[in-house]
Image: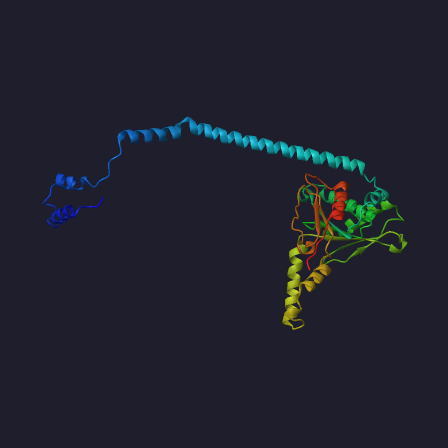
Length: 329
């Protein structure tokens, strides 16, 4: 409600006179008609009582108990689901490991893969050093796992195996690792029937099997490549430095640096792209695996799996057989 012209005129004259024309009560009476109605006491008391009851009352307590009950219910359902899933996968993997046990015999592995329509030419696996190497037998266990996988690949006729271990501890013990690989293949195939094996890594000389001419020519040679986290970033950095230096010395131009050139150089420096990558962890954990060589690689891991197992290796080969590769033009 706006002020009337008469009231405005009276107020202005009183203001010019220093508020001596009107007394306090007269000024209050002047603006009384323009003030909103004060809230009733009953309404203010009801609001206060409602606020107090909502703050300290039973509704908030029941609401909090309902939320807690819903949280416990959802958590219990999810926990039961996870337990059932872990038990199912553990039992299925255990049954498969019994039915498809290789008995350290190449013929059993060949029988298992004979039904597969195709096999990868290059298999890569991710192994983990137990407890970061703090355990006394962690390195020995890692070498045994690598030897077992090498025996599976040799028995299945897979010519190339790359073993990734994040810290690169296997690279520091290449002669010992090569000796363990050779002994494992001899225990599987026999001394004269074991296929020749070579062990290589970036920046080191390749180790070959001694007296390769005495091995059977019917066996496919197995090439094992050791890689680590350093072979990803450092390899790309080294290649970038070399290409920059060649451009500065005008040996090549920037237009000569293409994806095909980078791909070929990294393949020669580290390894070629694997067809199948198997992780023995319960979930896909690349652990810093070099990203460039796995652009088109089929990646497999068994949910809720614990440790290296032949059944996981066999399931990975089956998934590779069923996979469909669609390359863009």
